[in-house]
Image (cartoon, rainbow, N blue to C red; front, top):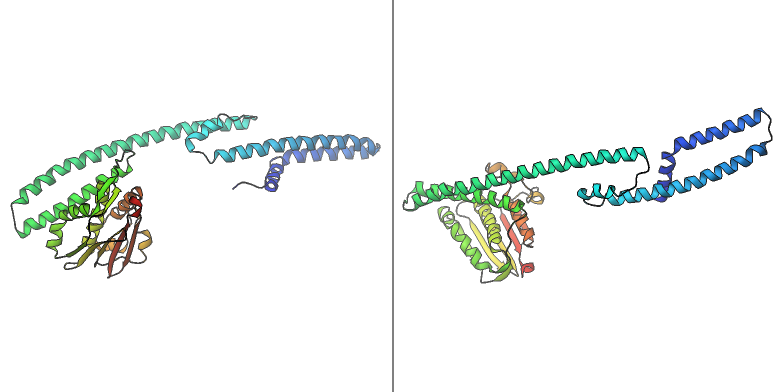
Length: 333
């Protein structure tokens, strides 16, 4: 908030109240001395008027400096924190107090940059370590899937299902770190949405069969300019959630209407109290208390990717009546 001229002038008087008080006290002392010694008051009046005229001129000059410095400092607050010290460095400091204050700001800035670099290095190191771990854990996952490929039993099907779930979680955390990276690779090309959907649904085929969930697919060939890999990730997260919270024997519908990709399930739904926060990182809500494995990352990452792809996402739901996710693709042409 920028102070008005009236407020600024009051602040100026407040900052100089000691000087004003001393000058007033000096004038009163001067006047009392004239009264005691019975000196003609005109001898007192003329120099006093001249003195206060000079003082008023001085105050006007100082007030203009005060106002100018205030507005300059207000402008500095609007720039990036990394540029503040550089801008302050160009300012002229006319008091010892301000010079010493600037030295303190410089010291804080050096410590802040040092801490910032240390934190950045530690975060990069952590991301590299986790990325390495993710790629390493994919090897035994793939090996276990190959070993189970030729075995067909209730136990093997259950193991395949759990392995698939682990694979989804690993991909989710890998994409989480990719999103945080400045070098996230987005390649926008003309993409067949129907083909992307069908390819990703093949990954979930065993889950649909195992849980006897009916899939109703109403999609034709539609081409949009988007990033195929990240759109596939968004679709995977939505389908994974739909499967997670749809009971055995339920229905999942996928349709394309007026540039909107709609994924609707007959699951347990989402509480109206949870809907406003459903895309927040780490928020699991009522359903998270039912499924203790919920991390609250899936929909958060989905929203982040949709924002980066310029795809508005809307979620409608009622408890025990299912959930509908709407992806608006008309801005992706």
